[in-house]
Length: 249
Image (cartoon, rainbow, N blue to C red):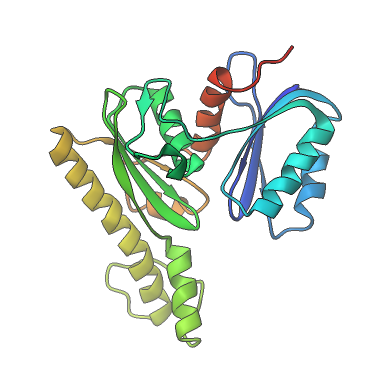
């Protein structure tokens, strides 16, 4: 079993993959927080003993600490990924890089590893995050908005008669549940499309669009120009591990 592992801990899922000798990620395992004991599921997926593990987390501190404890049981070396001002040709726009979520930072690294770009990187999870990266690696900033799922949940909390899930997309829906899906998905799509247009104006060329995250599939169907890369954060973590992680000895 591979001895080096990468883990991406989000607000709803944990994704893990072995890091191969060529620096690429292996088969990805996705574990949902809500399906049984997450830490027990993780123990079942990991090797009994490994050389090293790298974790990127945007989850609550208590859950992050629990995952780190499991990793420290199984691996000789454990590294926690952090956002940096510059890495592998990427230069982040934030004056205080630590304020940029590590998932956004790693997704941009993953995009850069796929080619110079320019890129518009859109993540769809609890939030929709959008980041513009020029071909020279300069991060030009981004946006954060509620995801379609979070919009639905907020509407349901405010008006219980509005269902929190279900429905199909239609440009002009004739049922409330479909109208909710169409409005919430459409809002996210419109934000991404505006970002593509504005990014193109700033750069002088339209950036390539990368979609990632657990909620990206419905939006990918509405954005035919997009590439959907669900493991983009892990791909960026592989870059980070190759440069920043404590080396195996």
